[in-house]
Length: 227
Image (cartoon, rainbow, N blue to C red; front, side):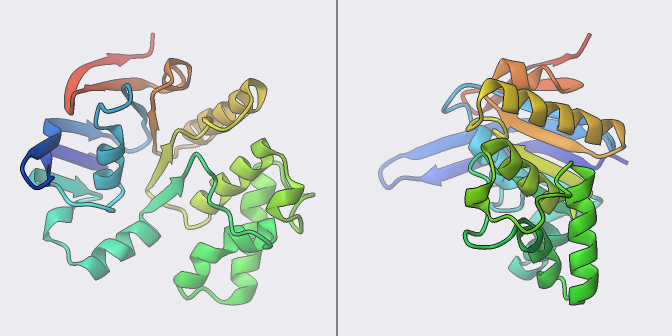
């Protein structure tokens, strides 16, 4: 069974006197263990695609299944539970809590799941150590480089053992050498069996994936696999 499946998904936005089709008849699947990039220029529908796949928005038409569940049939509470337990988010802007240590930033998703403090701390430390930040557990975001902040954000996404890691322009705010380092981390996670979906306009980032799905004007314009 595919981890996620979109079947003829559309998303319309009512702008008053006009309806904007942000997504049009999008069908795609992502298998467990794949690393896939959703690629397209600004305005192609990438952000809307990410919002739907991340259960932050609902399609206007079509069907979206994630981890065997029909997302369109779920209420807001169930969607929040999926976001918390099934998806690990990595954002371009890191979205770390200021004035909070790397350890506590990574442990935060476990707090919302009701995990006891000692276990939260242990799992957060293990996630940070896995990404080479074992010496930076007590550092706050302002004491970390951009690449280190993105690794903290990645550790936070992984600490809940999500079925899907969803990354939105994960190297967009980084210098080239730090961006390349983060991409190598994603590739290592993929090789370890994680399912990763990259949302990007950058062909170099997309090239790190096994498969690229190209969006244009809200529709799938093509697909290619890595050589």
